[in-house]
Length: 118
Image (cartoon, rainbow, N blue to C red; front, top):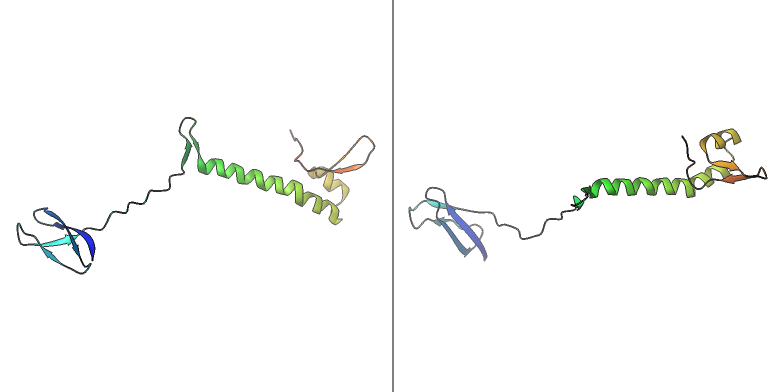
């Protein structure tokens, strides 16, 4: 048996009883059939929209920036060395994409950070 709240459609009387879910109740005031209300859930909503109410930074925007930064870091730390060492691309292509640079001794150095382009 569960605790259900019943409300009369005609007079608005409310009554809470321990009954089965299939039970129908008559209103004591007017004799009409009372309808069962759906229970309210006491679970707390997961509110993650606004992280900082003072600055107005939202969780979704902040998370999007974090994911984009992780993608960039992964590309430059793992994918660029793999692309350079594959031997598929020409030196001109690698230099124009900023994957490699040369030092003072004219040695090729693989970049692990995106080049500053203006």
